[in-house]
Length: 234
Image (cartoon, rainbow, N blue to C red; front, side):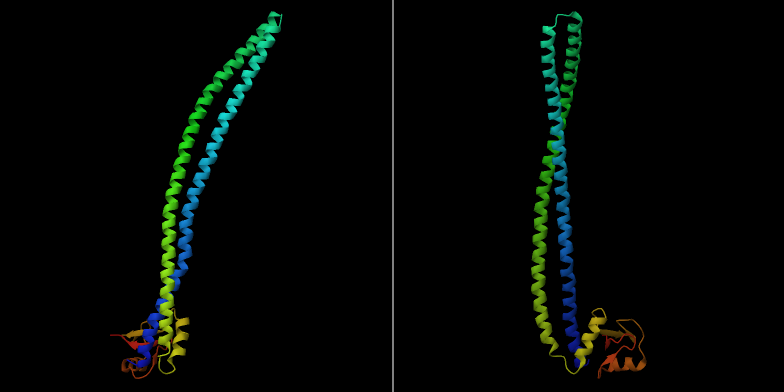
């Protein structure tokens, strides 16, 4: 194998590792956003449960207020009933008092039902908060793991980049500029194996002279279809 090709293969290995690390680093914000979206769902559930609980408690207070209003009205009617001297007015007041007392009975039933609803809403609120705490714990673990992965990948990236820079200085001849141009345009595969006279990059059959050149390993061979540098696969 040509020395230039051997050096470029080693360099390509590091470059492909750097490309893989860059892609993995690009995914980390997506992973972080996905983790936080789970938290947002549980936070919304807690808010909904809290709002529902407040609405249920307000309903109880409204029923209590309506009940107290009717009790006050009954007291006023009884005072007016006591003060009247007319039997028909007395009976009219009595009918009103009975009507309000029935309404109070109805409100008391509604109040019991509303208080039971409050208890259920309070349980749902507690359950939603407990679920949020559990999710917060899991999300913290996920975010810590993502941060650790990022730290390790950045450290590896710096290490591989330093090694790559050193390796690039060891590439003999003028092959490096060609290699770097191909790396930018050929999806990270500038040096490809050749098997059965086919380029391992574009999978097209190369002409006989190119195949012979790659097999001999005495000079740089390039695929005439895609331009990749070729070497003879074992």
